[in-house]
Length: 368
Image: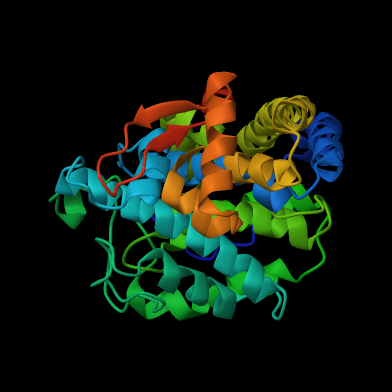
C-alpha cells in the first residue's frame, strides 16, 4: 500500500518533535561542521582546488538516482569530448553529472542576487535538466499532474510514496518557502525539515532528489553555518541510501519527524568529518606539490600549472595550452617534466593532431 504525503503536518508542531533526543546531537554536529569549515577557510582558491570534490558530489548525488558514471569518466569525457569510447547510456549519465555541477554554479550566481526561494530553485532546476534525459519534463516549472515514486512503470497504487497532489502543490511549496525565512529553534534542524518536506512535495516532474541535495549546502551557506557553499552530503546519503529513503518515507507514514532529524544530524556530522579529511588531504597535497613543481620546473608558470591539474585531474595537452595560455612549446616541456617525475601520467597517447590525455592520479585517489 502506498505511503501518501502528510497533509497539514508541515511545519511539524512541537508535540511531533522530541527535542530531548535531538539536543544532545547538536553540539557534536556543529563541532564537526565547524572543523570542516576551518579547513575550508584555509584552502587558497577553494573554487579551483575543491573542483574534484564538487564533481564527486555531482557523481554521487546522481548515482542515488541511478546513474553509473565514475568521476574519472566525467573528467575524461570533459577533457576529450565524445570520442566514441562511451555508449549512449554512459554519455547520458555524464551529461547529467556535468549539469549537476553547472546547477550548483548557477545556484551560487542566483544567491548573489536573490535569497533562497522558489525563484532560485526554478532557475537551478532549469540548468539541471537542460539537454539531458529530463529535458522534456518541464525544466524550471512545477508539475501540474500527479507523480509518484516506486519501481519503474509501476501504477500509483503500487508506488512506495505518493507526493502532494498537483492541486495542492502551490500551497505546499509556498508554505515551504515561508518556513525558510521563519524563526526556528535551530538552523540545522530547520534544514532537516526543509529537506524532507521538499522531497515529500516532489514539486517537479524530474530532478527533485538532486535539487533537494543541492539545497543542503546552499542553506548552510546562506545561514552562515559554513563560509562557502561547499558541503558534500551525497557520499553519506549514497552509502546509507536505504536508510535515507526509509526515514524520508517514515515522516509521512508515522509522523517520524524526530527519527528523520536524528538521522539527518548524524549524516551531516559523518559527512562533515569526511569532508574535513578529504579537504585536508587536498590542502596537504597542494602544499606538497607547490614546492615540488616549483623545484622541478623552476618556471614562472608553476602555480598556473599546479592549479590547472587540481581543477582538471584528467586533461588533454591542447586543453592545457588553451586554458593556461602558456605557449605550446613551453607547455609541452612543463608537462614532460611532470611525467618524468611521476606527478602526472599518460592516460592516452597522442595521435596525429590529437594531443595526449594525461592524468594527475594523486588527486583522483583522494576523491575516489
